[in-house]
Length: 637
View 1 (cartoon, one colour):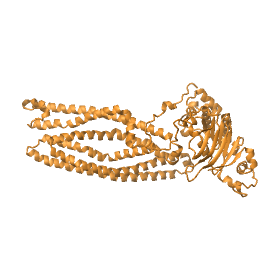
View 2: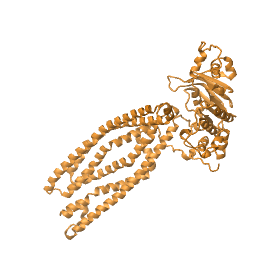
View 3: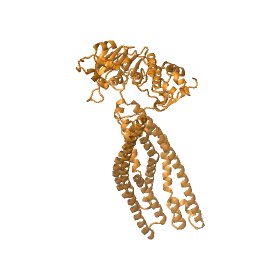
View 4: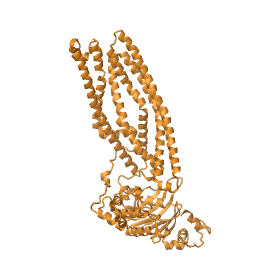
């Protein structure tokens, strides 16, 4: 077994660093939190942007020198007087050569600066997206099950993939363009005022109205984009449900129905996307026409100034170049309204998850338990998923260390809910759940759950090897301990017969294994956990007789020396329990040993006799008289 290695990282190796302000902060604070670790890279990006902006401003000037000072005979600008020796006579071509060389040099410096800011911006975007995905996943795993009861998994998947991807794309491309254009516009305003103050006022005067128009238009685009993202999330939910349930779909021949569901969701997405496109498509043409009017005015007015020798052709050429670049941020903003809206919507959806406040609270001075003895007490416990419909009502139950307790009763009686309160998957609405005399809310949550083992009706296996799946019970376990746990769970024999033994890969959710094999791996996982409290939720309900025998043998070994609580519909599996609790309608209807409950001849006896094929004696239970009571009781079984 020395060649067997686990790919599962320890929590310490894989834990996501907790970032501050996970709830109740605005989107801007979220963005600041995310980019704060990359301040140095952002300084490098900003410096490169300044250089790129400077080169963009300088780019038209070599052409102006050629037009005005090589072809024409105009005086060089004051800041270029050091080139005066090249601006007359035979040296004119030398000036042209300098202008040509300057064009290449400006382009080269701008290209290097552009490479640096593109690379580092992409780096920041990738790492921010990585941190955001980890932060979301970290937060989702710490939400209580109540959150998952009311939210679609498909929507969460869409947020952690598509929305994070949208923000990454925005940060690496769109945001860079906006920043570069914004810096360029500041520099160009000064140069345009230097070239012609009147023309500069035309550009500056039009810009606020365009920006105001775009800002108002952006709200409509954002609303349309929000609808598109909702529809896209619904597609993810439909596809996820259909593929996860593909065996049931095929078994019932409902492929056409699932395709219809996808078709409906997809068509709704198409309609929402086309509606959003109609809104977005109006903006860019309106801005382009407005900009062209400004350019047309400058051309007309500039031609007049040139004819009166009030302006040079080179100066008009440079001004027109600047004018197009001056309006480029406005035009880009119009074109990028869709991307900006998508990023804004993505941030809102991410912030909604991060603001979810259904995390189970842990006290600052929470108790660190040693190994628990396993005494569990329910004191007047009530619980409701919905306040209008209580699930548990005034539950009082005492379980001593090492006792085996069976819980049964009609469906909907609250059996699984009772077990969910012990490891704090939910907190009781009223009352207390005590373990070893201390309220479960006073324990450190992770350390409390580490003291509880689980074997559920359907063991969930993860992508990976059988070794990894057993090691999920204890990441520090050695290979020998894992093999020993498999032997105790009656799993070693079938694992050894597989082509790659413990390194054999299981299919998605372990579907390449039989139900009994999956359960035995689940039992091996619980054995490895070695917890003093064991919760069994109908572990043999879906097994055939042979598999049930092997699983029950393994469970018997597992239960030795532990406090065991078992939910069972098959009552024969709990008849030897130290105490059997019958739940009905959220109340404890009966409590006692198998023999005691059979002698009472009420709910438990009626259910047991029906399963055993024995004709029940006519009884009149206190809560529902009548000779058909036993049959009525079985209706929820």
